[in-house]
Amino acid sequence: MDHISPQARAFIAANRPLTLDGPLTPERARQMRKQQAVAEEESLNALQNSLGFFTQERVIHGVRVLVITPRGYAKSNDGKMAMYIHGGGYALKSALDASAVLMSSALGLRVFSIEYRLAPEHPFPEALRQCLAVYEELVQEFDPQDTVMLGGSAGGGLVLATLLSARDNGLPLPKAVGLFSPWSDLTRTGDSYYANEGRDPILKWEGNIEYFAASYAGGNDPRQPLLSPVYGDYTGFPSTMIISGTRDLFLSNSVRLSRVMQRAGVVVELQIWDEMFHGFDLMPDLPEGKEARQTMSTFLLDALAQ
Image (cartoon, rainbow, N blue to C red; front, top):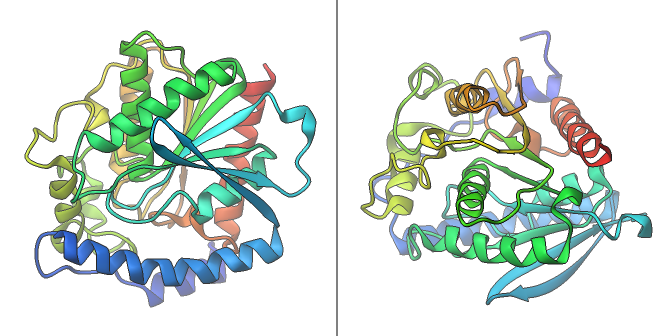
């Protein structure tokens, strides 16, 4: 691994995925959220010191939306925006996460980040319903051609499901889409679910993702496209960039999704970072993460400029 950064090598050597001793109950999820909030507060404070950003809360159709504005924001960008849906296995994290802040800074745009209700307390389709309601309002406020949408992991899956629903409901689609390792298949389908079990320092299926998938699906067929968007029809979908890594448990989700999109005529760019793991783009000081965010922001800004 001498061709990757020392930070990446150290992270891979020091970290292993969490193992749960049973299904993701509401009590267990609440405990995990509390632990995660403490860890993320330190990270967000560091980002505030290094990048500077401003937040404003809105409520759209009963859904909390956090508007993140980067330091040095240009008023000339007032007509443009990025809509963001956070990851966390549909059960963890919040609208104020590192990726939302980092991408707002990289894009120089306001990011509208959705605080959707979490599983297992609120299984499918509640999060999708909320994201679609916010999207419907925001594309009335902003020209869709001046709008991009992005998300990672479960947030990437929700971006896809939201836009598939929006299109089927006659709503206009954004100019471009950015996906960091989207969770596009809640079933254990695809080579990387097996080949990267034990190689990804963040995720594994057994004793981990299997429980998050079940808690979100809530007894529904996980292969339906709004739960596992890799099975969807992408006719008319906007240009899309997908970023993943060779150690990512969800690598096959990205590869399979890109093929489905290509067959539907979508302009899609798939970028795979060697030796990178799930969520490497979230790490502020990881050189590969910085490069991935810059690559994504360039793609999205180029689309808006066309």
